[in-house]
Length: 120
Image (cartoon, rainbow, N blue to C red; front, side, top):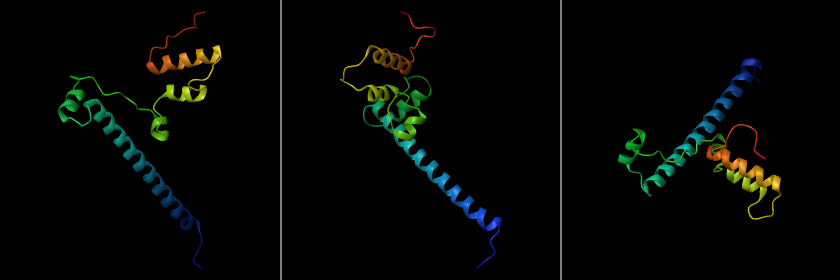
């Protein structure tokens, strides 16, 4: 049996850690690229148009819908509204408080949430 010291223990642990990080990074990059390509295909009507993509990047066309969320990257969830719908249910009876929370989450995800205290 060889000598066991900090070098013989730390080196394999460091190698495994680096391999794990590389694996996670590559998987998340591939998923992000697939999601981005799908987003642009949907914006172009089923097939990527490089002309439209160029116009989008230079501001001549409206940008494709932006889904950049860390949660979506990890879980694949579409947005906060879907999460709120899962929490409160879709067609079930809701209390008045749940309706207010759901409406507030919907406004926040659409970017129209007003600052300040809620009006009575």
